Amino acid sequence: MMGALKLMNNIKIRVKLDILAGIALLAILSLGLVSFFLMRNINSVSKEISDLWLVGVNETRRMDTITSDYRLNQFRYITATSQSDKDEAEAYLSDLKKEMDMLLKKYSNYDIYPEEQQLVSLAKESWQNFLDINTNILGMAKQGNVQESWTLFHNEGKETYEDLCAKLLDL
Image (cartoon, rainbow, N blue to C red; front, top):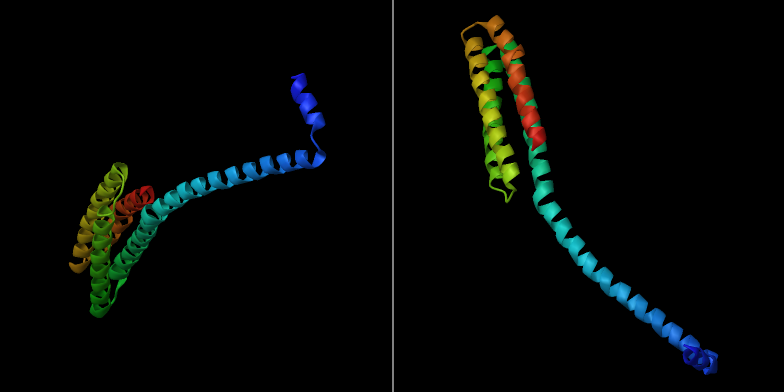
């Protein structure tokens, strides 16, 4: 130990500073290499997030919008005073159904986790329940049973709508 201190005392200050600068340079280079490896890991994780998660978020947001539009057009159909308004609402409901079916199918074809696959299945089931109630609502309205259609819209229709919205939120 004393030999090392004696050796350090005998070295010129310039050499000591050069050794210190070399050690600092090695430390900086090591930190740079470590940061490059960590950035590569961050890049792969962010790619997974953008490829899997964000696509799903956009799809479920669109599904939620379709569900709300569908509910509004059920109301529009029930309250329509002319046949042309009813035909227009029914055509829009048909378009919304096609788009929702396409989005659910598209979402289930993504490379998603098994838990998400189960949530998609639950959302599809809830969507089908919602459509079944819709068929009853529109059927009653077509037969002229507007009051019964209105009651179904507010009771079972509201329950299935809220259930579907909850399933989509879980997605």
